[in-house]
Length: 73
Image (tube, rainbow, N blue to C red; front, side, top):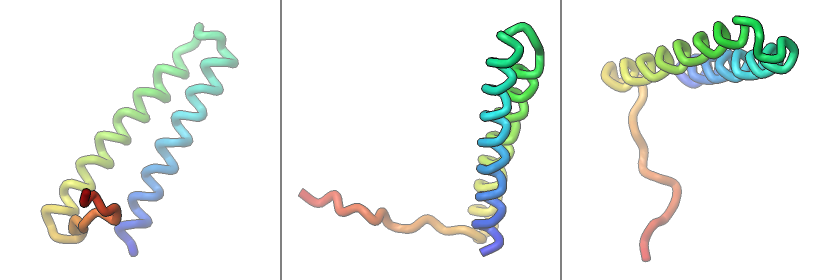
């Protein structure tokens, strides 16, 4: 359960930075650096999330499961 909470928190923070960068882009009319800083944070957090998920997979904290979709013809 802790693993899911960590992933959800990361995704919520990433969505927050994406929304705030859009807000600053509209408010500053593309003239400020706040949008660039927020988007840079979003990219960094996304890469960190990817690394955390990979490390959790390597440590055995998460395991891949079969697809819930049935692809048989």
